Length: 381
Image (cartoon, rainbow, N blue to C red; front, side, top):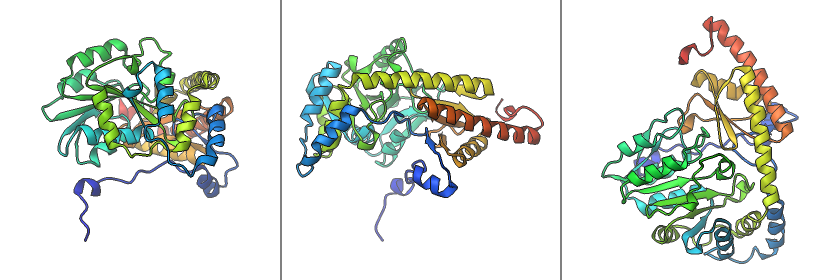
């Protein structure tokens, strides 16, 4: 029998959200709205689409392993030297490379419970020790993370804004944290939702800092609408970037991802439209949730995490919305069992979603009140 290490055997296969086509067949639904994966409801950047179409005739050629055109475009966009940038097939790939490059089996990676599930998987599947500190008010507890550092800690993962809670820490908090982190501990700062958060006062903008022990990771999957092409990048000191280059596959990102990303970075009109759509959608979601009495964590990203009375209630709420054609995300695997996340949509999608949420919430709370003879939040207060 082929040997499989226990840390691989113990992993669970990633379970993506239900495909729209499959749900339509199962439930015989005429309309389905997916607001589960923090995608851009406007689709991809038009400039990215045009770039992909023009590159289709070159699919027989291998890509530039250094992704020079894309790296130079990123360098111009963020005022960073090209040698301080590496690109890859999404943040997930870059996180896996970082875990492999800067730690060994048995070393510790430190983060918070209730954050990006990708870092949990990247850590465990490589035989590292994952230490998760509880969130504080659904936000990263930076002081508690520092207190938990041990001689075996090699990497600290921070997400700003955090996914799935949408909370952020400000410049002062980041600077104070970095001044206290040991020099031999790498800090990975995941800024997947920076495009939305940067409009909020005090957002740190990690790429504007320079620490010898910090690497900043960003993605074009969200605001730029390129999730289907898997494109991410990391910014950091030469030594860190060089190590990531040694870990990454030589011909990633693929050709279409490279040309689409470079074009999208220049599509300011699309980005502005995306941010305004997000602001309008989240404002409508906040108002409706408040009117319905549904608790939520306020967010600086492109999603809001609703707080249900219990994990059982959250799972049922998710399933009932799904059966009506609304795909949300129950974020129990992230470490928030009572959380259900909804991302922003177009005006029409948002209205559809909130109508479904109202229907399900009204039905579920009526049932729960009947069983509990009182407030639905009795079990959590």
